[in-house]
Image (tube, rainbow, N blue to C red; front, top):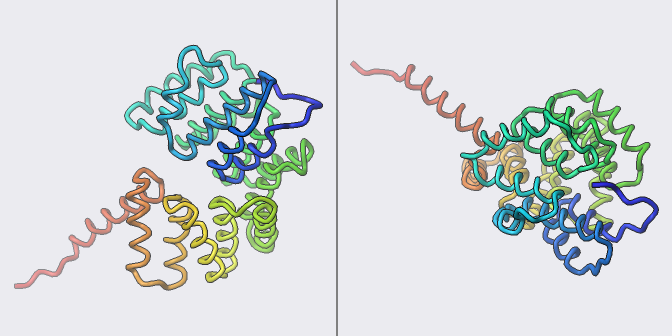
Length: 301
């Protein structure tokens, strides 16, 4: 899907709301637009369907994208099926392997992002990077940077950030990427990251994504009260946001909350997202602890 050049981006507000995690607002803004340009209509639909996916409204995407829908929209149905149907994930990944092994249209950014997102969710970061490196699209670059941070390759992420800044230093994606890198580096960079999240919230609206970014910075600086305030605000905006719940579990431990408080957030996370890596790892360690404990039970004569 080629990018427009030299034209006013009528989708600027839609994209901004999507990137900061304000997905329903992105949908609402998109529905207000009266577009005549075919490309812009298609791009609008892409962000609308991606917003529905982010809201876990997978059925909307699966039901509305069909065989005669534009080719650019087809990958989004694939992503919705992957996220909503765990039993089909293996076959979806196998099909994707075949697709990426052939000739890829590097101008189809939607396919590149979907393919990389699926591999990212599969913890296959190297393949995600192989898919994305073929494009100079800013969002592809941002996802590359995220994958590099997941691989603990902060050195590569810094180089990627520099490339993004050369492409568009003022873009909201570039600002977010800068905050992600600073958050990972830690130390004095935590305050810079905090200010970036705060500035984006002030210019737009505080979202769970931005509030979690601020909270993570505060936790790294041992500012637990500020972190709790940000996370409670995030919880009010989205009570099932997994990042918020994970951060609240961690914060509860660090700030000395009662076990009941921590367990409450943990139970909510497991109920909301039983497949979340944090929930899966915790339950696995819990079972292992119980197994070990049984070996040391005192027996009475």
